[in-house]
Length: 361
Ligand code: PLP
Image (tube, rainbow, N blue to C red; front, side, top):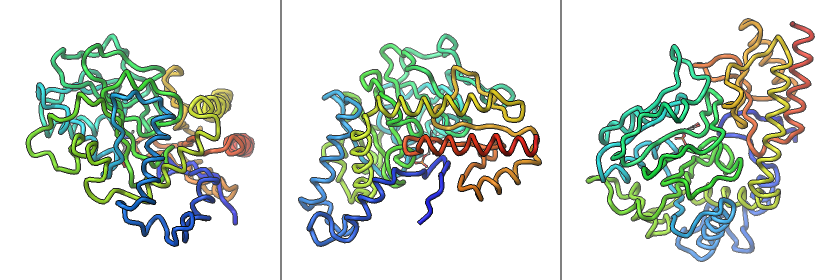
C-alpha cells in the first residue's frame, strides 16, 4: 500500500493511526458485532462514542461550562445560515469582516436573514493579501454578532490573534484552522468548523456556542438548525452523521495522544516556517501574503511562470506529492499542511521544489 503526501485543502489527509483504528474496528466495533455505520444512534454503543467525542473536544479546547458543543450536518456553509438564524434575533443586524473568499460567501448568506453589513474588507483590486487592521473595523454597537474567518483557506490568510469586539459576540468560522492550535473559546460567542480539514472526514460540523446566545432564533428556523433544540437533544434531534462523528472522535483522541493543541501548534509552526522560508529564500517561488498574516495551514505559492504549473503538478504527483493545485481564483499552487501532514511530507515537498527550480529556474 502506497500512501501519498496529500496536500488537499479538504477533505484532507487524516492521521494514518486514525484510519488504521477505524479499519481495525470497521466490521465489529469493540465486540458489538456491527460497524459504527450500522448502529442505532440511540443505542448505548453509539451514545458512548458520541459522549466521548464531545468530552474529548471539550478537553482539547478547554471549552467553558457555559458553552454547548454541537455535532451537526450541513457543513460550515450551513452555518453561514445557522449563525444568523440563531443569533440575529436581537437586533436583526450583523457585522462581517472580510479577508478572503469564505468570508464573502458568509456575508452574502447572512444578508438573506437580516441587515448583514461588511464592517471591513481587506481586498485590494479584488485580491486578498492581509487581514483588515482591527482599527479599521466599522462595528455597530447594536449588532447581534461580528463574524470573521480566522483562517481563509483559499488565500492562505490567518489572523495572528483573536480580535476584540467588546460586548458584541464574536463568531469565528474556524473551519481550516480548527484544532491546529489552542483557541481561547471564552472570547467567542460561536465557533464553528467543518471537520474535513483537521478534525475528521466531511459530514460533521462542530458548533461551539455560548449558552446565553441560544433560544431566540429567527422565526421559521429549520428545527435541525436550531442550536437550542439541538443542544437539548445532544445533537440527536434527528439522525446525526454517526460515522463522521465517530471518526472525529478518533481524531480528537489522536490529537490528545500527540501533545494536544500545544503539540499541534508547535509542529504546525515548524512545518509552516520551513515551507515559507523555502519560498522566501528563492527567486523562483513567491507568496504574496503579508508575513504577519500568513496561514500556518494553507500555503499558496506561485511559480516564476504559469507555464510551469502543469509540469510542476505532474512531476509532483509522480513524486508522491498530491493535490498541490492552487484554487482557480488565486492560481499557482497551494500546500495545505494540516495537523495530519507529517513533517516528512513538508520536507519532501521542499526537496521537490528545490529540485524543480534547479531544473527549470
Ligand atoms: N469556511 C471555510 C474557511 C472553508 O475553508 C470552507 C471549506 O473549505 C467552508 C467554510 C465551507 O465548508 P463546507 O464545505 O463544510 O460547507
